[in-house]
Length: 438
Ligand code: EPZ
Image 1 (cartoon, rainbow, N blue to C red):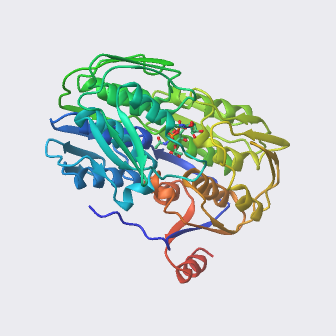
Image 2: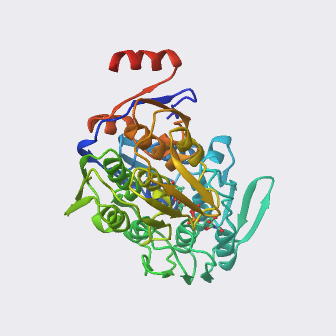
Image 3: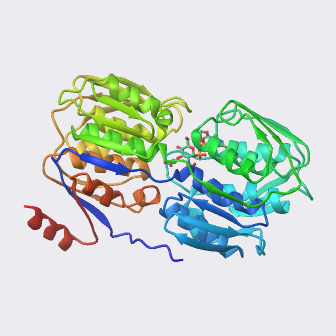
């Protein structure tokens, strides 16, 4: 499978249309990336459904094939994997360095084979992105872990042993990585101050469906009793909380009326409550939420926190929306140290935002003016598209390769909601779009 997508690609948008209609949410990217790596923990065949067809999952599947696993795409969202043929514990190719989730291969390879050599993770530049807590966990289970020439080199000297780990910071990646490695360790592992995100619970459920013995996922203490072997399973990934939240905020920013289908409303509570606070109407049903935006929306304060707090991955999208609300709002980012790079791009559109430390002070404006924008990272890129949809006139968003890491058919789903948007790969195409839509 080749990873398509070219650096010249950009979105061109004619703003002003309220988003109206229904959108279907795909599988959770941040659950899928871990679950794909976790297929290494069994020699039997695993079938996974509701896998989002995005760049980062394509990279994970390619990495599994590269070390000898058999990977069969049944359809765009279903994959059957058998890792009994894996013939290497080394993953150092350049393409794997581009994504953050490569670190999951350390936990999975260490759990299955007792060793792993994996290039240090890349991912969105929203902060330093250390992996010291992952390493602390592997060492607590008896592994010797070194970082040499850009790779994590871990060796358990046989089978990992259960250990107790207190995570100094709540870390989604470290929680999941330790949980995966501990599933096949001898003895019991306890993770304290664990992350509680829905995708942490989904990975625990996936591992338990293969015969692991994990209790407490979704609370801050997770207990894993290691087993000798894990077996085959068929598993469907939960809906993506952040993809859903992105469309909810886009509906509000364009003063639209959108039904977001195939969601778990409980996972969206922090986002829903903020939308209601600013004056939106949010109706929840079994597996859908409907967002109806009043014309006049009011300011509020948002602070990002680990789940169930307001998700950091929704921070840029919320800031774009608050800029279009009456009064002065604040957005405080407590998880990452450099997640306001999009503010300069919004300033080009007429936003009035001042960043002081880890807080953005956002003065409401009447509306954005279209501009040429550059996506700084995955979620900020999606936020800039939302700004373009709400703006008066034309906008372009380049470096959309970031956005395609986490959003499947972003422009197609938005167009189905009435957005005037297209993906183009040249200035000539931009001009043609402008002539066509007038
Ligand atoms: C995961 O990143 C997600 N990525 C991120 O989503 C998400 O923003 C983040 O969790 C928080 O929810 C994936 O799941 C692939 P962390 P991760 O470990 O695991 C510090 C997206 O847009 N930390 O929970 O890297 C870290 O610097 C992406 O989909 C350490 O200090 O996040 C941060 O300040 C962006 N040492 C905080 O903890 C460590 O060993 C939380 O990071 C690990 C993390």
